[in-house]
Length: 119
Image (cartoon, rainbow, N blue to C red; front, side, top):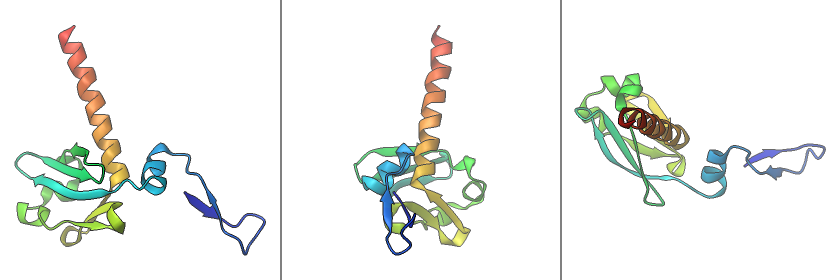
């Protein structure tokens, strides 16, 4: 949801988000609940959302996380009421929008690759 003051500088008007990810996050309240796994050896970050779904991404896609020690990876915190994750010691922030998009893209690519192998 965005706000604007079109034609009425004293009145804020809420607009519906056009992006489906923004609608999920800002209008329906989708949030990160916790990091279930941040494992350097497995090259994996697993985030549990407040609807209990889990999204998985590779740490190696994020240079600061790839270079981090396991102790540094374990020092994450939720930011903006679960809209993102922060590693203060690494000066790295990830939005759940980006995490979900990355996870979805990787899943589709994996399915496409597997379908070509089995044909």
